[in-house]
Image (cartoon, rainbow, N blue to C red; front, side, top):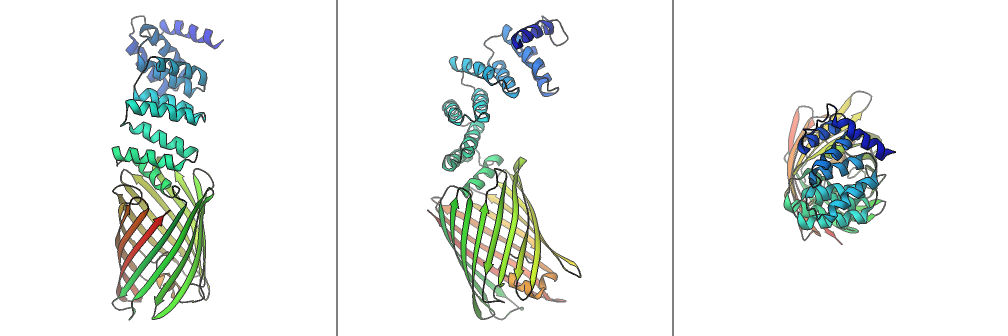
Amino acid sequence: MKKYFSFLLVIVISFSGYGQESDSSDELFQKARTVAFDQKDYVTAIALSKQALLLSPEYTDISIFLGRLYTWTDNWEAARVVFKDLDLREVQDEDYFVAYASLEYWNDQNEKAIEIIDKGLKYNPRSETLWLLKAKVYNGVDNYAGAQKSVDGLLAINSTNTEARELSVRLNELTSKNQIGLTYNLSHFDKQFDDDWHIMGLSYKRNTKYGSVILKGNFANKFASNGTQVELEAYPKLSKIFYMYVGAGYSNDVGIFPKYRTGASLNANLPRSFEAEIGYRHLYFSENLFLYTASVGKYYKNYWFNLRTYITPDSKNISQSYTGTVRYYTKGADDYFAFQIGTGISPEDYRSNLLENYTYKLKTFKMGAEYNFSIKKVNIFSVGAMYFNQEYQPQKKGNQYDLSLGYSRRF
């Protein structure tokens, strides 16, 4: 019935305002695109495309467009007939391979999609669209190593591809099972404290199919006293879009560290390379302290922009902390320069024990930079510096200078 309807529609169109007998295949193709994209009238667009192909049966672009129209209207078999005919004609156009592979990918025929993409890359080895589609197909079946390799291939062609950069960062956390890390932070004060602070951290990270789990041990020398803390964090995956952060920590050296800390956040990977987070953090020294956090991030070419806030309500007022971060990626997800500027103290700062005394209500300005780089993708190094101008008492300010070093090993 559909065949007779389409045939009748072609005849009607040939005498209608959509097409005259004098219309060329190019003109019919343009009209088909117009009614498809502007009016979403796919039935008419299909009829116009068929009419154009009667005039120019070898017009590859029209055939590819007709295959796409069938795909958009869920007429999978008709689309496959069109694409297989193009395959027999040994068409080498990038757009053909993208359209055909997308059809199979959307229908969960992932092996077929990869086969089509690989063939397309033989003819179009620098096709960013094909490399990105290959990464998405592999990522969709949890083949993270294959997805990372595909993303790396794309970034080697164009390091400013926003979608590839975003996907590379996400995959970076999934392509290795284990990771150990060692960090060191030195804090020097010109007025607020007489002694420097030293904080060392040792961590072990394990990736699972449910998300990553991190065990941390921290040692600190603050106020000329020593203290230790143990932390456990997890990032369970809820879906392809949502994942969570949950964390808890304990220390018997209150004042050096909070006795307890907990936290939870809901994170989302949003369209157009945006990401967002909303959650809470809890610290307990001699009493409970709750902070609520939210952030929004955006990937753009080689850059990642992020704005985070911490809101701390109490009976008298609401204290706020804001931090803006910009990363510039030089190669992979572990290779970047980062710049940060903000106000206030956050519970993630090494100075979070100052929150016990509520000095977070006083004015604080901070700025700093970090350089992260990798060697052979398994050795990750970082070096950073931060400057703080802290109002540690009303109308009294002091400066703080932080130096941080880090090393991680994946295996």
